[in-house]
Amino acid sequence: MQEICVVGAGFSGAVIAYRLAQQGYRVSVFDRRPHVAGNCHTERDTETGVMVHAYGPHIFHTDNERVWQFINQFTTFEPYVNRVKAVTGGRVFSLPINLLTINQFFGKVFNPQQAAEFIAALGDVSITEPKTFEEQALRFVGRELYEAFFKAYTIKQWGVHPSELPASILKRLPVRFNYDDNYFAHRFQGMPRDGYTAIAVRLLDHPNISVHLGQTFERADAAHFMQVFSSGPIDEWYNYVEGRMGYRTLDFEPIRAEGDFQGCAVMNYCDDSVPFTRMTEHKYFSPWEQHINSICYREYSRECGPGDIPYYPIRLVAEKAQLARYVSMARSEQNVTFVGRLGTYRYLDMDVTIHEALETADRFLAAQRTGILMPAFVNDPLA
Image 1 (cartoon, rainbow, N blue to C red):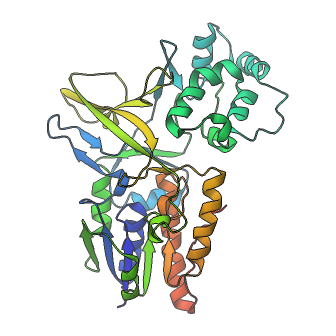
Image 2 (tube, helix red, strand yellow; image 1 turned 135 degrees about the horizontal axis):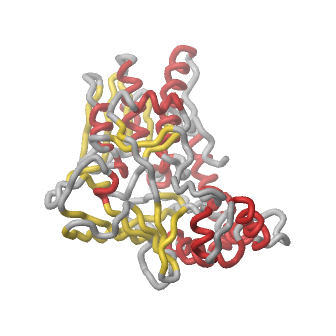
Image 3 (spheres, rainbow, N blue to C red; image 1 turned 30 degrees about the horizontal axis):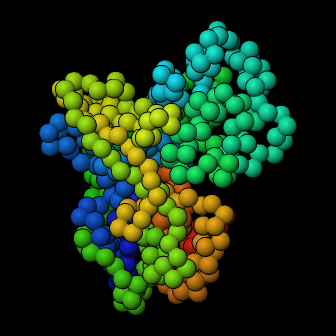
């Protein structure tokens, strides 16, 4: 057996460690935090007994059957539909924007065809090829809906004006001309009965895997392993020689209450007069459980500084140019492969993270059979 190192015990690291351990490799997993599962970590709140998503809510959703079958080996998924509400202008609406949202917002009783024609007429047809978030919104939903639901919320979430963000971000929020308020449209959706940390624990529960929590892995230590898979920030790996990459981080303000507090799992706050982006009531993420009291998190987004936990990359033009320099350095490295959201500086959902981790393990095993070296990236971070 030859030893592999995995940096990070989130889903990227845990899946790779599991797959390689199954094939007879000894794997050492390092994570600086005192728990596994990374930002998907869940734990019981000691006062309410509610299962809390410690770093913000994670809802599992995918169309990838391989991922769905794989992850179901390690947990029982309960049915769960994410139904998001939004507060704007002193009123509550459903997201994504759907037929009910449109009718409520404009005081209409449109049918689907009428609503589609109405929204099309609101769009700015002079914008033929939207390049920014703002242009995308103005082109397809018009100024009123853009300013009510997207403008201030986006500034709070990303810390920049929507005119500075790429149009691709808004494509994650479609407009529907029916009453479907399921936030996601994927075939497989659910919540793990025992939480996400239990999944990572089971993935890492293998005699060939040793887990080292509360330990920071140093780049110099890579020489002791035949292969390293790093899911930590790529700029940190190189000691920020090209500067710190741009990330957003989150702060959470817990609120405990008797009974229910807001009546739903997720409530977005779209007005700039409210400093937080959303409030999450965590017992609604486990509707099969019964809890007398409740715990909510107010969620604040801000720029990630030294010592903060990076949540998602910004990926503006400046960051992409900086990333290209780190990628060039990584491709000259031997026996180190960067994975996951932080290692590849890409916004990845859980299912994509797991899919890419499975792909990475497959690629490594194939490389071992053929004698080909593993690349620094299995999935191109510059794409």
